[in-house]
Length: 408
Image (cartoon, rainbow, N blue to C red; front, side):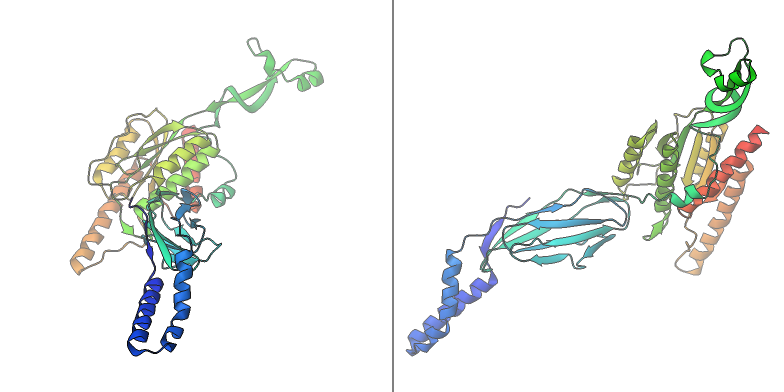
């Protein structure tokens, strides 16, 4: 980082030149009134020479983590007046819009930043210019701040309220089979081999015969969210990768709040992968992976297979379904005994730009994609378009229907 540079301001240089010219003119013309005209500037120069030099200023961010749409404040720290300016970046809203502000003596200069997309954002380089009280001297202090990790929005309230009953296929949910669990299924007469701690003493005292509680077996599995980062199509306001991250965030929070184990698998190299775990710490790790992702990572490689997979795991595949090798991975997961739900992340308003040939090629590609979707649905895998957090209810409803068909 460059060191701070001190010097005089342009106002000081103008005042010095004006006084020098006035003194020279008074000497050449012999007119003392010229000195009277520049005497005020001379007094200002004398006070400026006696005033202390400004110290280097510093800048800081209110937080190194933020969510999409949240405001992060960039403030300066200086004893006197200070000017704060930052380099404008894409997908960042600045207040003031030009990214520069001047703070007076005793006040702080502040710039508000709001990030419209998830990921890692560089702030700056930031330039601070501190002045003395008379604005005669300045100290230029370049400053490089750490990047800001921006996590996606977490809004699942509408999805939770629209589903009256939790699904019975994954995680900390009950199965229709009776066994050693926590959910009460029935109260029956006591049999040899039953555990004493399961005796229902209330029913026993009323009936006069030992009765015990019959429970349902607690089912447990892994919830894997596989994201296709090999293809990212769409506009800056909403691409397929943005839609995949939105689905990842909503699904992970829903299942982690339910007490399930959630993991992440990236078919590419943008987000990275995470082994299934439960708890709030897992959600923080997931959001950290998303916030630290680099969008410019190459995506033209082949998909990475999901090797660690237990039989009966629930796998959500978030993909725009534009690559045949990703479709082959989905079919491979089905062949390995996983329960797969495919989240379609292709933007609904996506169109081809250019001449008629490009538009015709895109229509043909959409026809091939429709055949791919039909092929996947033939294997019993639901394909659900993702249109925000309200799409969670159709996903859970399809899982409930799948669970009902399996029980029959």
